[in-house]
Image (tube, rainbow, N blue to C red; front, side, top):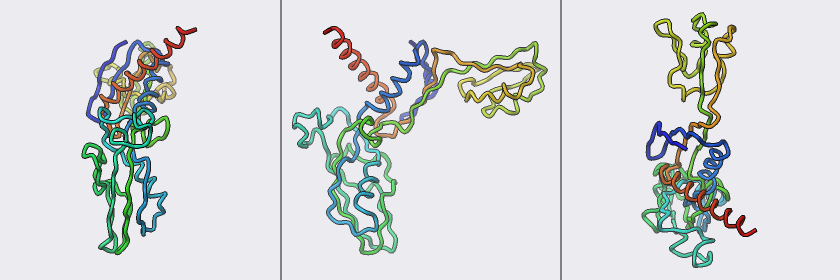
Length: 266
């Protein structure tokens, strides 16, 4: 198994996974999406709300705000020594108190006050609600670690996808270099230069087959490599993509060892 990084940033990575089965590729995708825990607001205690939004709507909006996550300092409530009663090892208190002083005033995520300075909204400018003059919102929210398996608000990724590595071939005996396939390619993969037709930046191919459908001479074919995949992973910002990948592989290893132990017991 080999990995080649095509593009890497703190919140985004694009890489090629080679010599892997489709089963493993999909398992890795599911682990990143469903098993890697992150912090999210799980409970809201509404003290005062005179805004037009119902308490439930405000709570739902708060839950979808991505929070920076410190996996080394917190554990999931069901795994905590407090037995799920709530302590500083498994939950963080976040408060919001704001009164409207203008005709229209937007309350943003940077106005949430966290008990732990490491557990704060990833983005400061997420709008939560609007206040009119003399309207008030006062609440306490409890953030906990959770998994995307339980609710989408705990997913560490905004998108994680993969596709088979594309292969574009040309039958030069049939090709007349008419350029029709070049014109219809939405990703500018096919080029004709110096009386030579070729495919460039093949990893950007969307496998749409428009070039194949356009060519009446069967001079173009598009296929895939069965054991090679192009992954795209984008983090919500709660964790870096590097941490998401390493945690997902660690969890996959732990689950595999647990499964092997159960099998050995038969």
